[in-house]
Image (cartoon, rainbow, N blue to C red; front, side):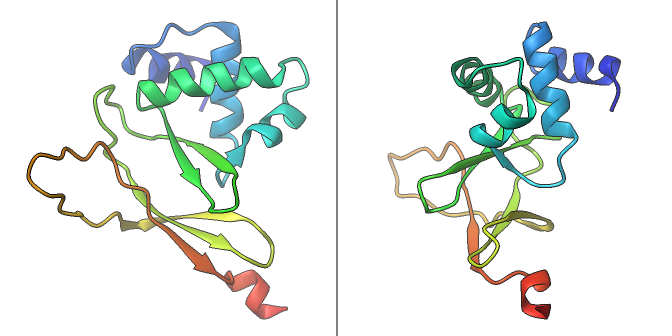
Length: 139
């Protein structure tokens, strides 16, 4: 993705493309797996933790990132490939390796529909499978 594509993606989600927002969108797009705020802070030395968190919060509100809770108190983020400000149309299952602590996208496995009781409205579903990844099993 180039700068014009990042700008267009932000605009499609109703987000004004500022320098910091573009920087974070580019950083997320360059990753092949979800990353934490700490990971972004270490790779984006010109931005502090609070600036990164504010941008990620805005991205979440506009369905531009998925937030994955690993179950160990860490939230990881990945760029949503949806082109819709209102909903995520690319939700998928994630796998957390308990040995190497990586969170891996399982793009080919969609999140199952979970029924909720009458009077409730689901806003999203986060499915995380925990275990040992293929790379660690080979060791």
